[in-house]
Length: 64
Image (cartoon, rainbow, N blue to C red; front, top):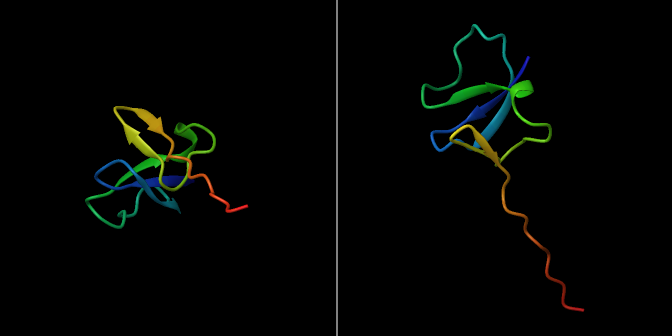
C-alpha cells in the first residue's frame, strides 16, 4: 500500500510503498494511508487539524 510521509509540520515529504509493519524511516515522521487523503494530494501538501492544504500556486511571469 502507498503511504504519504509527513514531517513534523504536516508537509508531505515522501510517498512510499510500506507493508505497515516495518519501521518507518524516522520517528519524527508520520505516515498516512494515501487512500485516506483526497485524490491529488502529493508532495508539499500539508495536513493541519485533519484538513489538507494545497501548496500555493506559483504563476509564471513572462516579459512579453
